[in-house]
Image 1 (cartoon, helix red, strand yellow):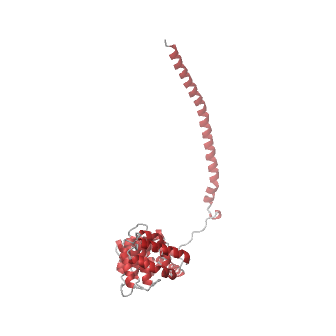
Image 2: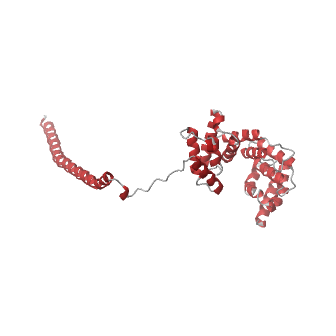
Image 3: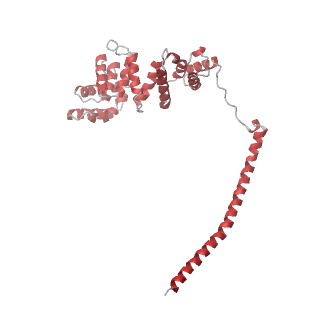
Length: 312
């Protein structure tokens, strides 16, 4: 932490507070420190008295309320308080913050630091994740919600037991997650098990199996070694390990294919000669014709001029 720089920033925040500036005026300064508050306990401790004062006087923006939720929940730079943490996250959600909705959904899924005041509720967490995911607005909140929605939707479930609408929603989230590149490594194997019957699967021609096989093959390139091994094991059990295509060399071509390759230059030369001959014929015809047309126009013009002069 560069003390001189942080002192100037804190003074700027305190000056805005004393001047009664609108809440939006604090946002520029706060955006420079909000991410650091969640990682740097010393920085959080340095700023928290000022930030709490800003919130208590009603000048907090939604982003500040989200950060105060995290700090009160985890005791980052301040005495932990589950009650105050929930108070701030609810205020942020009331202000329309999608980031706050995502953080609250996470808390419903894992209530660490909020025990006793907030019960786990996977159903409500999924509802909030899906609300963000279905917004389809390309926001960070949508991208962050996608993998967590998938996690809850496929846990201990199989596509064969779910409604077509439910499976279609999972399909859409998977596709959006691939587009946003936010799927977790573990999803390759977990989704394959959701789409099929796992090791007992025999529907090798089915639509769901095709999706599972694609995910498992992609999972062979996953960063996590455990995930790669699980994907490999399932593909081996299905006897569906992809066989790499052999490199094509000239010596591996058939006689007919080699003859085709050899004939290509001669074909190109032939058509080049034909094109040149046609161009020469067109040029030979067009030059005399152009001269003839020019002489005709000249004679016509002179005759017209002679007629005009012959009139009294």
